[in-house]
Image (tube, rainbow, N blue to C red; front, top):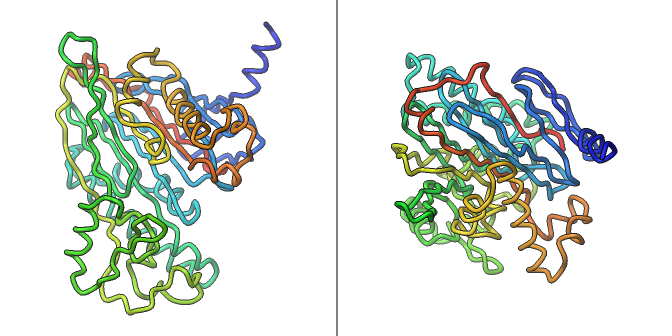
Length: 382
């Protein structure tokens, strides 16, 4: 019993640091960078926090790595301004996702302060714009030494709970699903609150064609997958500046990213789709996740898993459900998939990030403030 307990402790770390703590962790480490006294435990390539407190209830979070370098980043920030949740699914390397994890919330805080602490859709949109401008400036600074940063981008899914309103902002194809109680039946409905920007969706292809009426190659079907300019699936992101500014779509970036014709206007956008939702007493929980989860399980399955089990460990449970399904699709056992190392693992599933927020409506209605504030982030350097 003592041995098992000490083994558990060896796989968890509790750094009582501040929100600027950036202690790196290697792929073989039992620890991960976080702050605000948050414990992240490790099981192979899976990092998780089974349960914790934020301003409006309990949370659970987990991330599993598949790429050689983890490209997903995430954070929960909860304090006097409300609660801010971000899931950033990077592509083309980790640079954009890491930059957004470091700067988007900071920009949001600064803009909220300028607005006397009031959060609006405009507040969030401005924070996204400042973050995009900052990353573009960074690409320009690094162009002579690290031009490949120009081809790094990230999907962004942000939820902000301010008073009794949930704001949802999205770029790309991460997804937020609400679990809502159905009367007194004991059932919970799955309601998708985010908008996805992926060329595999007919609405997005139509949107792109309307924005680029003179470009018959704005979306191209390659190997059964629709891609913007035949290159990338998502149509909105922070980063991917090679698809937004002509001065970065040239050598020395990789030839596969260079367009054959002049870029007369941005191909991709960093303007988020933002909606507001008035939280209701029957709204039970929120599932924020990168598309690596939704590739393998449906909204309804995810909500049922959360609803049918204890709050603690919800995010880890969802990640493992996706991994079991990924293994099943390849006619292998989960235990065999678990043994496959990063990079090779990417052939079976993507990096997956999940954050579950449980909604305590008594705390929400009272405007309760978490003191001291919570600031927790997934590790930056897996």
